[in-house]
Image (tube, rainbow, N blue to C red; front, side, top):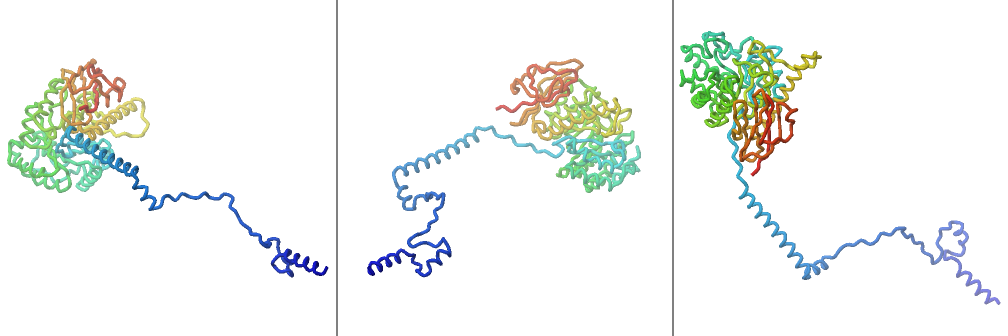
Length: 506
């Protein structure tokens, strides 16, 4: 019995935890976390990540790459790549060989890139009546996209008194030299060039160069004046009566040309009273000026047929970079007074689209009238309240100005208008149409009707498409912008003009 009791006690001891029999109770009270003999606590994550594919090993890749299937695939892709590259190369060569060669751009100067704007009377142009006021108007003038301002004359020149002539002195009536240089700097900051009118006897009645006896002396004194003003920063000089000085003293005229032009970008502008296209052409060829302003287009002296013939004669006789087109000036007055308010936009369109440089008088952009003088007070827009009549006049001025700015901006951007070829399409006693085209640029067609009744222009030429798009019109209600018109029967209302465009077609 005692042996059985010992065996039972031994079995009970083996069932006790292996932490020691004497501390079993302590273990139970110390914590329920104590692991029992033979048990292991494992923490299994709720969402075990799936094993990632690490790709083939280097040895496996080399083994697969050498199989026949992959070898054929590699060679096929390589062959396709090189055949495609070779095909593109051949295609590019074919396109280059068969594409029409681009025309080389002509050599142009700054005055060929946009209009010139003449300010012949400083006191009439600004409220302050001086050169300081002119400087303050540069920002407004830059909005017109003009390339050059022809200013003056501003030098001391008592009428018909060659003895008291002083080319290098600014008349006190318009300001002083410092003000003029401030104006030049302001214009240059805006990318506008400044041309100074140095016509000797600009206020007298004996001619721009005084009498024949005085021409030699005046021309000699002019040379030092030219050097003085060119050193002050002007970009060129304008002289009236060039036919007189160039014929009377040709050697001095050659000196004048050399001083101004001298292989630089300075411009020498000549002004003449001649109106015959042949006379103007001869003078332009003989006197050697960069631009010659004449009366060849002066309204009222010719009909549309004669005007077209004059344009064609000058265009065929001279490079268009030497042609200047103007309808008014210091002695003629302003555009609106010469052609009438109803035809201001028509003649703006004419000057901007002819082959050459358009030249405008101050105020032509707003339809300024002479009002009994060739130097009327310039009208500047103000925000003050206006009555009905004055408000209508202001609205009309702004309409002229917007039309002018649109043409000026287009003239600067469109190569066909800047230096494109000129092709006469239609010509009658009261109507005119011509084409301006350059290489592969968009083509521009200008059409005009001076008559008091409507006209239908039947335009036919191998270079023309059937239809064209209206870019600008003097009557937007009759020919809205961006509308399409039929060139075989182009309808223009009384006194209407339009600028059309169509793309180049090979």
